[in-house]
Structures are given as C-alpha cells and as structure tokens.
Image (tube, rainbow, N blue to C red; front, side):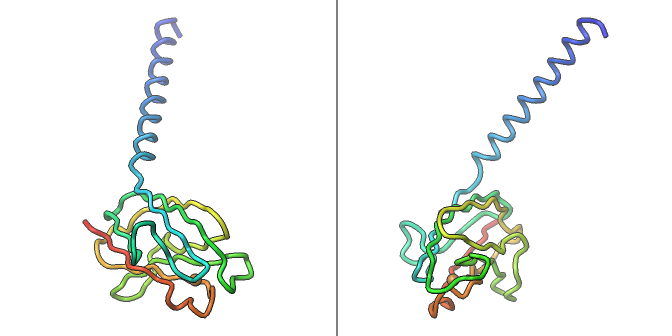
Length: 142
Ligand SMILES: [Cu+2]
C-alpha cells in the first residue's frame, strides 16, 4: 500500500467512527425519559401528576428510570414490584415490557409499542393487600 492509500484508509475509518459517535449521541438524546416511583403503598407515582399516567409516541426509544420501595411482601427472587404493559383491548402482554423492580434506583431501555392505542401498566408482584390497585393508564399516540 502506498502512503496516500494508507492515509486515505485512516481518513475513511476516522470519518466512519465520527459518524457512529454522532448517531449514538443522537439516539441517547432522543430517548423519552420517564421517571416512576413504585411506592411501599403499592402505587405507581409520577412527579407532578395526581393520577399517574404515561403517554408515549409509537415506536419511540424510552428510558424508564425507576425508584422502588418495598411493600409488605415481595417475590423470592427479591423483586418488590412489577411493571407489565398490557393491551387494554384484550389484556395481552406487550413483548419487552415485562419488568421486575428491585429496591432502589434502576433504569430500563425500552421501545414504545408501535401500535397506537390504550394500554395499562400493572404490577405483577403481590406487594401488599393493595396490590390489585397498583396499575396506571398508558397511552401510545401516533
Ligand atoms: Cu405491586
């Protein structure tokens, strides 16, 4: 390989690397950040919302930031609350949205459902006698 060829090859690799970095930075910046607390009282909470609910755009990247507090009971594996997304129309589970929380802070990188419509988040851990009331509305807009 001649010297100009070597330089050309290096330039191509550096350009490809920069393009990749720019793409990753954009992807990170575009994620819709949702912060949810899973309370010891078996309720989901979102700051600034009296009745918590989540609205996302179909197919958008989501970063779910969770802070979870132990209720009165939990799973043997240490999970203290769940977060499973169901389609409102038939109560079927949405793939990739069957989450379990450990005590404290945790993050999940997710993708919003591609089908607009009404969904529901439900807890899947029997976290207290109030567990059945642990759910919230989830809307996917086009
Ligand atoms: Cu629960």
